[in-house]
Length: 347
Image (cartoon, rainbow, N blue to C red; front, side, top):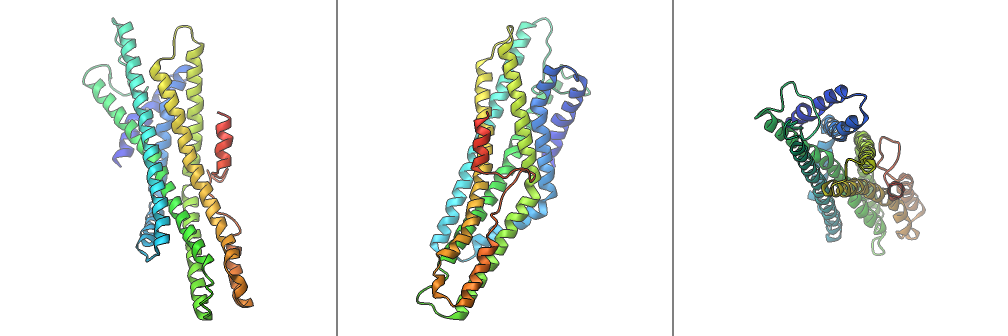
């Protein structure tokens, strides 16, 4: 609630009001939307996460149950491997977005100071993010408090903007680990030394139940959070366009020059956008592949040692894995390496 209140009070509402006030001036509108776009997207993601809180609670319960369940050393290592990948992706994404925030705030502070030096007789005391407040922000301590509130709001934006998405990515990779373990179990379903019909059906029933559970897990994530991924994709696309317009405007201007801090920010910003897209595409590709391989694992088990009725039972697992699971952005496109390559080639 505190995060939503700070975002609402210091970024979203003041910047929307400021946008209305400068409507018609394209440069000022773009400057406003550069930060307003991210703030509004973060607020919407928080609302979606809050609205689907019960689904998140259920998914976390499934994760805890999977870790508490007895498992072989091989299965445990698969889960640990994916958990470590999730942690690395989360730390890397948070580091990049914090670096983007740091360079943005630094560049803004330097630009404000340079502007005040040039206009020494008339201090404008611009805010970190263009916004309108119903009080005089040029006077102390109003200016300092407002700037601190905006910096705090930007800090919250970075965590909500990337934290929620990387958390969902962690859930996706956990499901992928469970699909990998399910595939190993299916491959070893038929053992040469085990000819007991009841034991075979018991093992197959466990695999079928677990497969259905994993399908429900992945479908719950897709149905609950595909809108959030769509918001993230649209926000990143619009943000990239606005940033590119501002950079080209500076390059084409004879009065302004692109500073070192602005150049560093541009590089870090593009790296951050591409890294977030790569994380989504990596998780989506892995889920697609692992869910598909479950069906192929049925071919690799020793089905030729089964009776006709038992082999027919295995076919139901193959049929349920015919359609690979996907993570989409609002049902418009599925995240995959193909999507990442298409986007990267057009930047």
